[in-house]
Amino acid sequence: MQTRRFLAVLGATLIAAALPARPAFAQRQSDQGEYQILQARYGTATRNIDVTDRLKQLARHDRPIQITNDLFGEDPAPGQVKALRIYARGREGATRVFEYREEDFIDGSQFSGWSGGRWGQGGGWRGGWGGDVAGPQGGLTIVTARYGDGRRSREVTDRVRSMVRNGRLDIPVENDTFGVDPAPGSDKALVVVYSVNGVRQEVRVPERGRLSLP
Figure 1 (cartoon, rainbow, N blue to C red):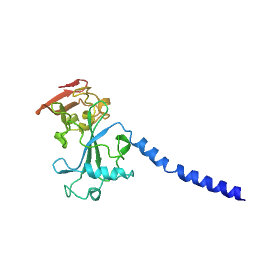
Figure 2 (cartoon, helix red, strand yellow; figure 1 turned 90 degrees about the vertical axis):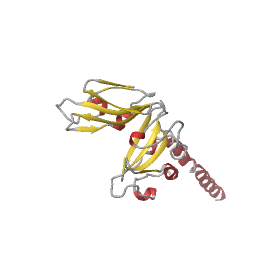
Figure 3 (cartoon, one colour; figure 1 turned 120 degrees about the horizontal axis):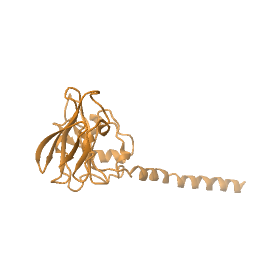
Figure 4 (cartoon, rainbow, N blue to C red; figure 1 turned 180 degrees about the vertical axis):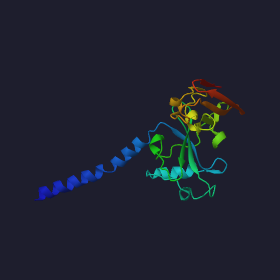
């Protein structure tokens, strides 16, 4: 009888000791994403606020995060549809923008150090929204990009930004590149507004052409 009781207590003790290790392992696994967050901003292109520190606090809870005004404690653009933009740098050094609309959920598994808060304000980052998205000073900045035939077009800014490698962009202009055909049967073109060393320029490349910048 005493032997059975001893074994039961021993088993419960071993199980309790093992349980805390599981969340820690899961957290380490979820912090191994491909992108390092540089900054997070919430609002619209003209009215937005820096929410990097607040997002760090939320990420440490390691729970699903839904985008709402209440989440950040402020509405920077009342009456307008807002978004959270997370600016991040990939392992090859390219800057990418992740955009989440109101009511969307953030996928933290894409970001390294997510729940540990080991991110924010990476080296060479100047921050911003829209046209202010930039990598190291002197690099290529994609301001806007649209693909279509003029009457029917699709904004592909984030897609084009994600293809910048080491300060350069070299892509074919075709439906497969952008994952969409906004005007089936029509001749389309890619129109990109960009800046190099602070000088803003615009380029138009017809479908089946190739865009190389700078």
